[in-house]
Length: 337
Image 1 (cartoon, one colour):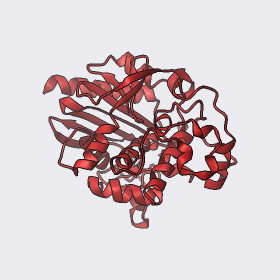
Image 2 (cartoon, one colour):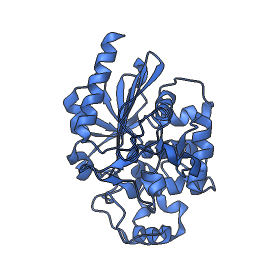
Image 3 (spheres, helix red, strand yellow):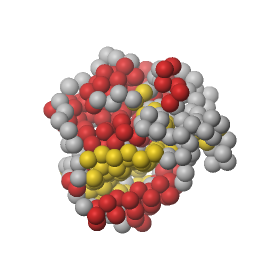
């Protein structure tokens, strides 16, 4: 496991255990972890950046960018709906028989929503996957290339990858299932957009610091990052931002656990639309979980209090355990400042 924390604007990374049980290789500051759906926060940032560049608007309908989706349900689904999981009931995963973008678009063309867009939240990889494809298309780039050029390079993330170079394979941690079996993520039709990033704790902590104005960035990119903290829908104590999820600070542990529960992740939940949307705030906890079959990640930070945490593990520990550990660490750090 690797743990990164930001305290009073300074970052620290701590490494524990083994990157591989077979080789006994220890986790170090160079160890690469799969971060699962934390990838979606990068996709949201790319979308927000594309909006800042005038390439798209979150109010655009998804079908605007793909002719094959015109005269389909996506004539009524906005990019904001995709980025907040409120398209109307898209599934958690891409159906298993879909192996190409063309097949994915055909699936989308035939898809019918269970709910009116903007009325219910259903957490969905296809939703964010399509959003990422739209962002890249709006900038006339392939998705991975757009992420590397527009985000990774500009943020100074030197060890963050969608396409892992051969030279970095030796640093790639071996993942393990809950039964201890070795596993790594398999390629998927929207893997890059929804769950495909591999990175170090230090790089992910730098991304957290960028979300907290921890260092100077290009103004357009900083506005794009800040834009992902706008709140659009409420579910209980949780406010749905553009992929990110936020809570008033200080937050109760029970509220954090409830917002990251199986009910919120695996079920459709009615939402309250915020009109107008809630502008980015300092006194909030912003968080996101990420899981693959062999890895578990959690990120949380408080923009106005110079506090943040990154947890990366090469085993998919229960989300409640991750949230609880991060909460206890941040609580103790906030009291010790």
